[in-house]
View 1 (cartoon, rainbow, N blue to C red):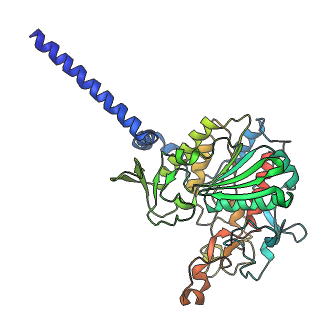
View 2 (view 1 turned 90 degrees about the vertical axis):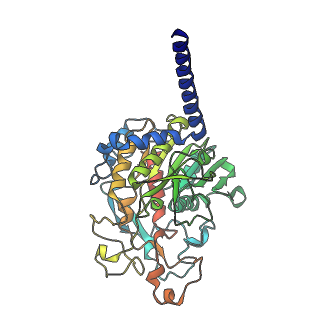
View 3 (view 1 turned 180 degrees about the horizontal axis):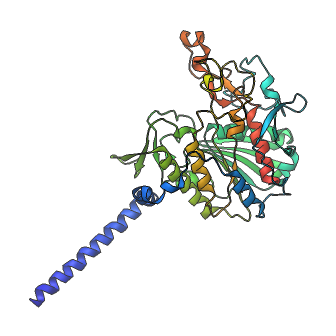
Length: 426
């Protein structure tokens, strides 16, 4: 019996060794996806208590924590107890807009509203006025000097790209014509201020993590698929940046559960599962933050997150006519408590919880509420139309009005004034 027992023992050991080798092989094969597979299986056990759907972003807590830190790039502290994101819009023809549309050659044709026939100009003259304090005046030369020798990068979707272009427009007049350039290579666009050895960059990544919508030109896919654990395809372009401004929201709002890919897009057979939007969004942002924590130094780097940009697709929500949208709107919403249906409060709550638990400080640019008032600031029909309009559309402009993106100059210049304030005067 002893030889047989010895044989059984050796067989058992061999079996365990084979199992361990198989597990090790799977971990190597799937790489970044492995941790997300584990997280999904335990998501309901570990995370339900994080979400309180009706609780909005806890900005006051974040700002107080920031005031206790010595932040890179900060020149001086802003006014104590001042919430820059709470205020109202004031009409100001003297100081707004800060540049003219035709003066900035970097604005994409889908944002040049005046060039595409917008008849009114009132939307250009609104200035954001915080309650009880003032925004610091935007000084392009000062900002360029502070960015000397640095890389600043915007990462995200077309709304983040709009903010990027806005900042370039605010800065470029202070740079001689022969000392600046803009180049695009795939998903990466780089504006260079040569005299300052500084770059301001934009990287297209609408989900932050890898997806089937990552082509910067051809990305209008109906069946969106996200690989929530995989970020290195994008992140290899981010290494060495000094200031990061990222966003992600619009592309998650499909109205359906998200399709999550386990494995590679190159595989012949794809393992795709469905996940509730908030759960998928949480995993993607957490993956982003793991990269930030491993690659950004809080002593020298700054990280900003821009909250969701609202839309204005149902005018009955603000007391307008049924069936209308932002088309023809020329005034901001006056109701200080207005909250649009496009801005999902569950995502706001989720973001607030995620960024209060990070090892590296993340400054949230809470542009949602102040932008929600600006039903007048969208591109609407005054933009380049990439497809020929049908007679039915031409007869009903509301049917093709873009109530998601914003005219430049316009609202997104204010987003950058807030970024400027939180970067240098937090």
